Image (cartoon, rainbow, N blue to C red; front, side):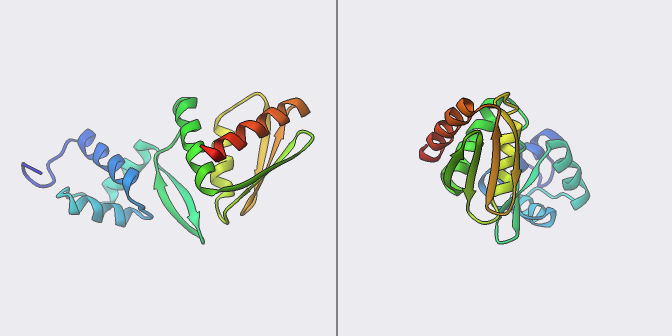
Length: 159
């Protein structure tokens, strides 16, 4: 990088943080400070903490009790749906249905992250979700909507 190390505007620094979070598995603020230092961005942990809040980064489970920072998917439905598709392809093992209740089985530790994104879809046909370690109950409004939702979730698994 050309220029003086550490002399980035707040917007440039936050863009750099977003880039790092998108490509690296970062679990702590301290790790993020180190990643930035490797890119010649000198920053304190307090500044990184403020940036994390302003960027609305979230900690998502990656299994075995570990977490990583991720970009919040609080934008449009397209953003949430894309992230949900990625999670379904990587971590969802099965989707089953009984009337209007769907049971989504995930890899251990991933149910809450998947359920959070399902909730963020804010769809009228989904009444709500309940997540454990590796299982999510998704309540559809009607049996017909449950059947359609199951087909949609199966499609997400396949990509």
